[in-house]
Length: 238
Image 1: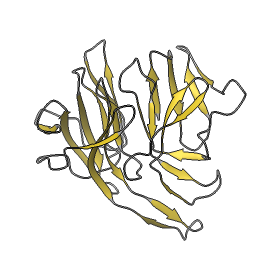
Image 2: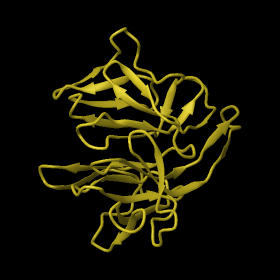
Image 3: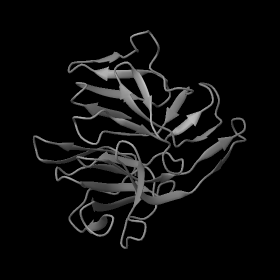
């Protein structure tokens, strides 16, 4: 996952099948160790797959939340986590524990807070070929205001269905994000588009957009482009 911070003047890449942290210089990626020479690994982590990584806005440091946390680099056993951290040049700052542990959730800043939607609870145990996987898709909405997690829109109807590997991005309008796609299982992609607006309703409102959409997909990238004043989508799997 990647997150950007204008204040720290850095774009950060972390997670996947490695414990290394990288930053984009504007021309190339470089390994970003802490000043004392540590790898930049999250406390207690070896590898972390499919976390969420987003900043409330470009002036604040990115927040990393959740993901699949493995017990070692070679172990296949592990589980989703609900730990949260902020990235700093000198390391990671631990934050209050988030909502139910999850991975492959959608996460984006709305100009003031970070919004989290969906994902999946997931665990795996045992050796290769004998592992058991279990979990459930989620359809909940949360915000993080820098200190506390708050559940929003629990009674909203309509709202997006439970899903994982969807993508979310700011729309350029304060307190609003857009969500597209995701999946409900193997080769079961979604192609719907939703707007979440914190200014509507009692605690926010989801509304479906009927505009022409790209082909259904999951595990894609979505980002706001200030130069085009719109959202850009790339890749994914059908």
